[in-house]
View 1 (cartoon, helix red, strand yellow):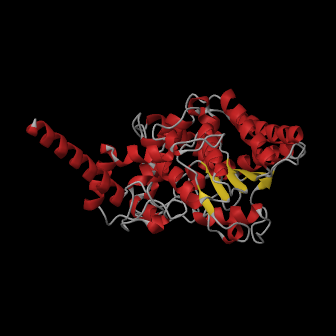
View 2 (cartoon, one colour):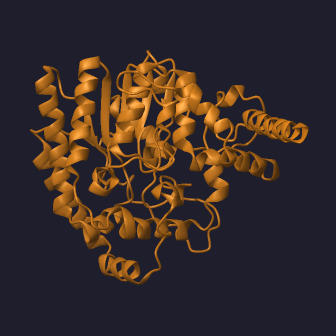
View 3 (cartoon, one colour):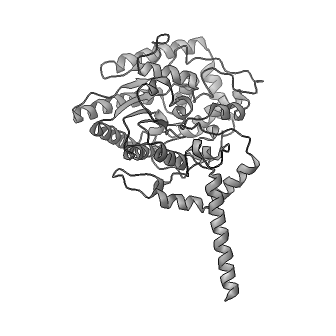
Length: 406
């Protein structure tokens, strides 16, 4: 009996020590705000576990302004931009790699239940409406989130995380790799310093991103009816709650739209934009309110068209992009100023869309695309050949479906 009690005591003591160790190291930053953590460590593991991290941070910050969207918005939208700080006290970037529509809805409800939310900037990108992107990510932790009725059990979920071997393993890794920069800034944006040291060989990164979109994101694309329903539902809730929403299609390098055309078709891309305009205005009419601002930042503006880095570059050198898909803070700052009518130099960057101007806008983009392709003869065929014969950009189970940003 003494041996049993001794064994049980050792087991319980070891479990408690593991939980205490995980709580103090807090590799995913779920037990405190980043600026108030018990140990000021460089936490990079949150990049692969951002769903749980951002759910917890929303509880701590109780944001009155929220950024939603894919990793494009996460990488390029600084929640502490002066235009946000003029209007809001506690902004937070909750965008995530391959954030499903259902996940965006869940994080919106979670922030709404914190009691202070006033406005949302939402990057609604073409890829997130694919039928195959209608499920929650495997790192999603619903126990950390308040649902649409503001119910949840975050304390119980945090206990599970504290006594998880997954957390212990990440905490131990931090002790041996503590010099790497934090993956996120305090307010949820991807830390540019992390990318500056991790994104080596920028040309290869650029081309690998194209390959990933070709092989995965745009492969077998089908517009998901469930995703359209969720999009409509979020907008209706926002009108009912009196929240301000600004919707935008993210800027990316024009080469990415050629990948999209190869795999999906330009006409599908255009039809999706029409659907976004239609749903936005139909929901507003149903709610008896004005439609939310909806901006298109895709296109062929001089800000979009940037030369690729040289093959021998070893660090990111492009002004506006980390790769073919993800824009940098410089471009994000211009985007922010445009949607708040505070940009003076690049007033032709981006177009606010409505039922009245959508067809003219789409025709203009077709003309600009034709002119860009004419200036780059042979580009389509060379890209087609390279994408057909290249190795897959990542394995089938890439973390978060977005390995290039992890």
